[in-house]
Image 1: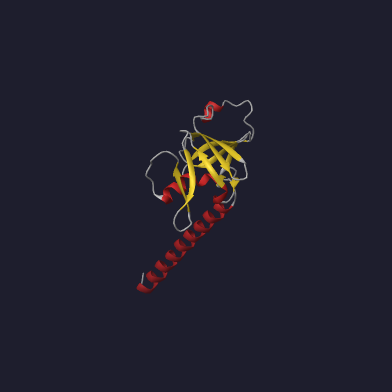
Image 2: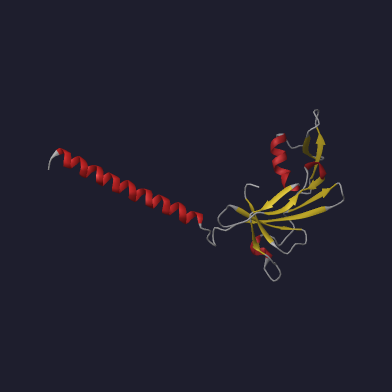
Length: 169
């Protein structure tokens, strides 16, 4: 075989390999765009308020967390009657669920007849009470972590649904 024929043959093989790889790539993208039942998740807004509407929070240790204004009129958060050192940003992250809480899915739409102990929701040991200036309030019951360690179970007020929230929240 001459050099010219070898080059043409090599270029043809390379072009075929590139075409096959491009076809596989576009096929993979197309398959990921099609929704599947197990990948379907949605966001459920449970609490959507302004931060300045929160009057106080009681955590599961019966500690009151209250807002105050710092010297440049920003809302900061601290424990009432409890010295716990925490950066203002970290403290805000800890209590942001009081005004902005979203769930990534619903584990069960109706918890009637379900053993709540399976979800870590059988006691009020992990309950948070959030009180607002308009005299509204929410009681959040945080359950156990899911088996994939990416979510927690949560019930809110008298809502019979069991929600999934991100573990990072």
